[in-house]
Amino acid sequence: MSAYVRNISERLAKRHDVTVFGTNPGDLPRFEVINGVKVERFTRVAPGGAYFFSMDMLLRLRKVDFDVVHGHGYQSFPLHLSTFAKKREFIASTHYHGVSQSPLRDSLMKAFRPAGQWTLTKADKVVAVSEHEKSLLLHQFKLDLHKMTVIPCGVDYGEFRGLVRQRRKGRSMLYIGRLESYKGAQYLIEVMPKLDDDWTLEIVGNGPMRPLLEKRASELDIGKRVVFYQPLPRKELLQKFVDADVFVLLSRYEAYSMVIAEALVAGTPCIVATGSALTEWVDNENCFGIDYPLEMPRLARLIERASGHRNESGKVLRKDKIKDWNNIVEEFEKIYFG
Image 1 (cartoon, rainbow, N blue to C red):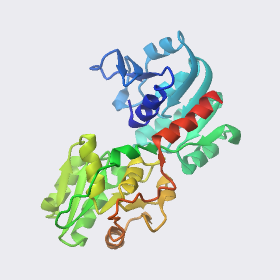
Image 2 (image 1 turned 90 degrees about the vertical axis):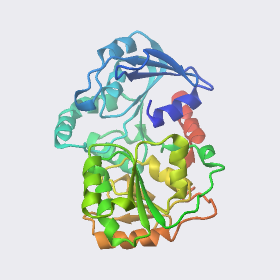
Image 3 (image 1 turned 60 degrees about the horizontal axis):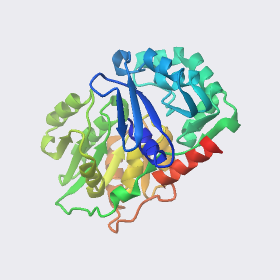
């Protein structure tokens, strides 16, 4: 399960009968119960590790009666297969960027748009996680405004209680996420020579860009100042948020960004690229924006400036914008059950 689906379904399962349908990469159980959530996994076809079509899932959806079906992810088939389920209410969460991660996927996405239009028209409610995503959906699919609603992602505030910042020499910049070119981690490597030698860049994640990033760090002779981590256990990841002086995400395409929310809850100031939903985080006090095309001297100055806003008291930054997952689930229950 994705973190988004897991956080919603496990909380719903405390009060409702919840089943999650997903596709199986081949090494997971067909049936499983996780924290009260029934999980069913189906064989799939996933060219290039995407789209996740499953005829088995479609057949199962046609056999079972549901009160509510909540489909997730515009760029994968399970959301669209959900329209064929036996159900009373159909909710669609698209997590829509408007573009895809490669020219091939972008072409397929455009060819797929009529089917996507049909799915979203069939939905009783379409949920966006930001005003930016809502605007994209309204513009590109001509949806009725009354069926659109914005419910952001949440944060588990309880996970951050008791975490204390660990003092260390120097300053640290943090990136957590998939290492794809559109995410912008390569610019963090490029800016490092323009920062004082006491700065360290910590990169947590995997992806096709990682070998190139490691090579570039070596070429710039900053290998000792750039530390790469595999995906970390949750507790260690949260500690990284708390310890960082600044969190930077220069992604071109985001519908929301849970890592920005979590960094701000940890009291860590952020820098984001403007132009997607990330712009909605910018307040020039806790979160700072920078435009493409990026200029390295300007980015370096912004990193220095933002790090000076590091909160030392444990106070949540931008709490007005960040909701706990329990509150998010209550909003979904109002949609599901009226």
